[in-house]
Length: 169
Length: 169
DNA sequence: CTTGGAAAGTCAACAAGGCTGACATAAAAT
DNA sequence: ATTTTATGTCAGCCTTGTTGACTTTCCAAG
Image (cartoon, rainbow over all chains, first blue to last red; front, top):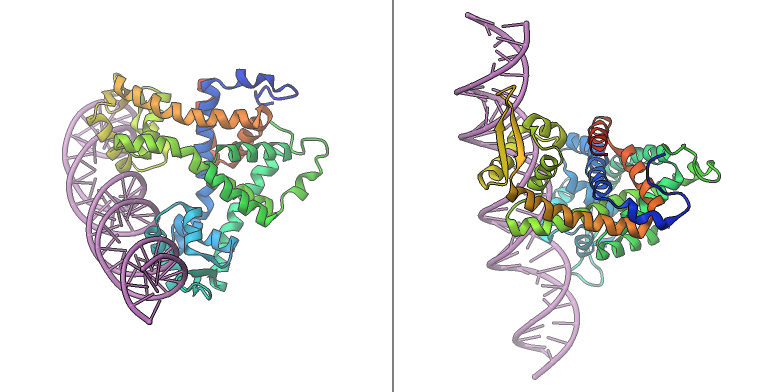
């Protein structure tokens, strides 16, 4: 099985971390991320949207009623950039923006039925690939995959991720 | 490679793959990739370059003397797009382009000393984060990480990755 | 109550880096 | 001699980042 050393005996950790091993990890991230986005990208192209629209829809679906500011901190882009994407989604009737009841400065975002349909199409494609990869690698590998990814995040993003993760669990 | 079922009780594979588990994997990829590129991005900004320059330098460093066409198929962009980046790197004296000895149509690409220095700065930052993540997660997790990523790649990119992986091993 | 600042969102304009299409050159292959 | 291949270049477009300036709303201090 894959080099890894692995097995029972974590003392090997140091041997393991040659620059070459690290480089392979870096390239694996690079190529895998391309695969990760490939299926949604093909669908988005047909609908004349981009990855930015997908990201917005994903997190609105994930946390319905979230505010623009919330979304900004999750996506890590400027509000102007997000706003452009959001505007086309609203104009096209995929997203609904409701003025806050308590604080009228806020806009609460929801997917419409049409938006929900596209989000499902996109996420089903993406989950399909993830499912195959998980099946091919096995449960133990999946646990390791998640551990390494989590350790790779910036602390602030890890907090965002944990919050989302816990909310959904 | 990891026998599909893995671990004690391969029967868990199916239970495991709820949409919620898959969604967490998707979000983990999203947030982790941001961390993955964060350090190089900061360095690149100081040098007035972008991620595209980093990618080109990485693979030229990885396979010195590679041709433009080779690089194109690895990076998966158009020649016009790559050329823009390559031209600035050549003009700035980070990359050298030598006419092929055997086939004079080809250009073989090399990092200059200056290019090597910047590449090292970038890759050291990136390896630093990868190393911490690997250490935090442990050798077994690393093996799983690599297995899942590999399974997630498009077949063509997996071939590219394997070739590079083997060449360096 | 009013006023001044902070917060949320919007509009305008610019830059990086993808893309396509058209075309030029040199070298290799037929 | 002709065609194909490898590379480079110009022009122009699109998406999605950016900053700066502005409006509306809220809240808190006077």
